[in-house]
Structures are given as structure tokens and as C-alpha cells.
Image 1: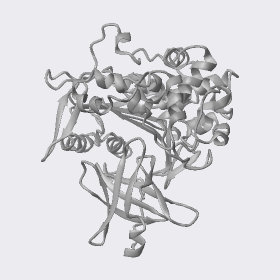
Image 2 (image 1 turned 90 degrees about the vertical axis):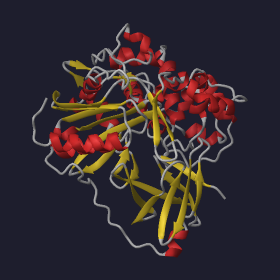
Image 3 (image 1 turned 45 degrees about the vertical axis):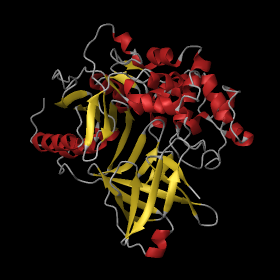
Image 4 (image 1 turned 30 degrees about the vertical axis):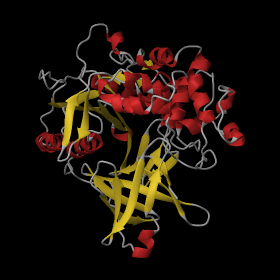
Length: 470
């Protein structure tokens, strides 16, 4: 372990963050030019038994799986089996949406960049129904879903999307909104093109060549390995949140490409070597240099200096460098993988509670390692004045078919973002319909979207576009 003088301030800051969020356990590791330079654990893999976390403790990684799905697509492109600019319908002819013309225009690239124009849909929840039924802590959700059929296959997922009535966010390629549905169907495309299951092709093309021996979709594949993090959930109490063990893992078979891989910090550092080196892990070439470059290209803007590539967010001015990263959250899972390619830095952080403050911890570790104060900001947002008339243009309730909802209100001269179960966040105006607020000691940007008449119709929050409820 490193003895750099930054580690004490980083560890004290991180421990305080984790205590404040009641996070049971977490680990962060940094590597420089492929060599592990620092790692630290916090809390426990299993609190009751005081089980220590190690570099080989298996955690879920949630949506960090998305870059793996993209890597498998690029592996197929390198082999000449497909092009990311192929229409989705070439491989999924039964895929239907409410707009046949837009459906024809959608490409694999649009799916990989979340720009197909699909709004957030509730397919993930329905794909999780069987897991909910096996989870004693999900009785209320199961009761609410008793009239709903579970989605268990790619074909059922496509039938479900075809049955939905929704307005597109825009022409394919024009609007960014995070889509688990699109990523799920990348798994279907990989299956159709390779002739193998998505899970088998990912293992054959990426996981095995990279030496990722503890990265699996099913814990049974670990063959007796017991270094597995206990999952924790929480519920909001009147004064605080109550955290409790909830060991029943969730699975959604048609959604595995969107977020269900399990891995370790050690394995994830091996994976990130692909992107640090231009396609190699050790002497084994896994992707072409051109494919790696394409995956980390900033294709679509999310917010100031933040873009999306293929399964990665790309921060184009991160203290003068490029930060490539992605997070993941689902029951009992928080994850963050990251690299600064031009500086040879790679890193991963994992936790056993959803919504642990890992993005903040990632930034604090990079700040410390690079001799900045642990709370240094990568972007200095220029806060601007906002008149009452201007502020009231944003007031309203915004929601998705996926079930997310936020309310924007204007009270006592302040614009507030209200979300279920959270204290309202105060929004600071930074221009061009964009705002920032602070959560887990991190400044988070949101952006409002207007129609051709200039009326606010949607808001981009949490990478998803929520539509204004009239």
C-alpha cells in the first residue's frame, strides 16, 4: 500500500462520507501504468460477521456492465461481423416502436450512446419481477405488480416495447437519455450475431482473455469462492435511513447487458488495461486500438464538459485531462470504474449498498493522488442571477414511464428540486437552461429542454429525460 501523504486526508474524508450515508462497506483501488499503487477498504463485506473486504471480494457492478456490452460489440466489429452504424432492425427485425420510420433509422451506435430517442420505460422493473418475488423485502412491490407479466426473454422485451405508447424524445441521434432498454437489446444483437448467449460471448471475448477469473453473472460460477459481499438495502425512516442485510440478489435475464455483471476491484483493474493500453491486457490483444478510441470518444454532450461515448461518460476537461468513467447502482450495489488515459491512471471503487457516494470518493482519490485538496472541483461553475419570471418557467412536475418523478418549485427566491425521500436541493443557475446542485459533496448538473415554441417540456436529471406533466 502507498504511503503518500495524501492518503490520510483522503481516508478521513471518505470515512466521514460513508458514515454519513450509512454505507456498510467499500473499497477503492488506484493503479498507475498497470501497477497497483494504492487501495483501501472501509467498513465490512459483512457487518454482522465483521468480514474484511479484499481486492478479490466479489461485488455487483451494476451499469458498469454497459461498457462490457459495448466492448463485446466492438469485438464483433473488429471481426467484421457487424458495424456500429448498422440499423438495429438488421439484427432485430421484430423490434417495433410507436414510430416505424424512426425505428428504421435507429442504429447500434444510437443504442450505445443512449440517443435512439427512446424515453425511459419500465421494462427493467418488469424484468426484475421474478427476483422481487424471491425477495422477502419486496412484498409491497410484488403486490403492486401482480397483474403485470414478467419480462424474461429478449423477445418478450421487444414485445413489451412494441406495446408501449410513448412520444419519442427526438429523431434518432439528436437527444440523449439513458436507456436500459437499448442496452438490454445490445445483448440480443450480440446473441444474434455471435450465435452464442450474451454472457457466453462476453466471457469468451473479453473476460477470459483479460484474466478476469472472478467476474461472472451468476455467483454459482465462482465454484465455492466465499469472498462475496453481503448485499444491503435501506429504507427511509422519519429521522434517518435504516440499513439492513438483504442477501437475495436481483437478476433480469433480458437486461443482463445493461447491468448485472459481478466482479472484483482486481478484475476491474485488469479490464481497464484494455482502455489504458489501446486494446491490450498484458500481451493479449482484446480490442483494436481504433475500437478503444471509438469507445472513449465524446459523441454526445450531457452537460458542461461531460459527454457520452460507448458505455462510458467522458469528461473532456477534468483538471486539464480526460476522465473516462461509469457508475453503477442497483440493490446492494454501487460501483465506479475510471481512467485518465493520457496519464496512465486507472481505478475502481465498489460498495455493497445502492447509491453509496462512490463518484465523490473517486474524485477525492484522484485529487489526493494528484496533490489537490480532496474536495477540489473539476469545474468552476459560474453561478448567475435568476429573476422570478425566469425561474417560474422551470416550475412543474416532471416524470418518466420508468416511475421517476421530480418537482421543481420556486420558494422564497430559490428554485428547488424536490425528489421523493430527499431534502429539497437548491438549484444554482449556470446559464442556458442549466443548473447545478450539491449532493454527497458533489456538484451535479441538470438541464431543461424546450420545444420549438420555447416552452420547457423536459429536464435531464440523473442522465434521464423526464417529461413535464401538464
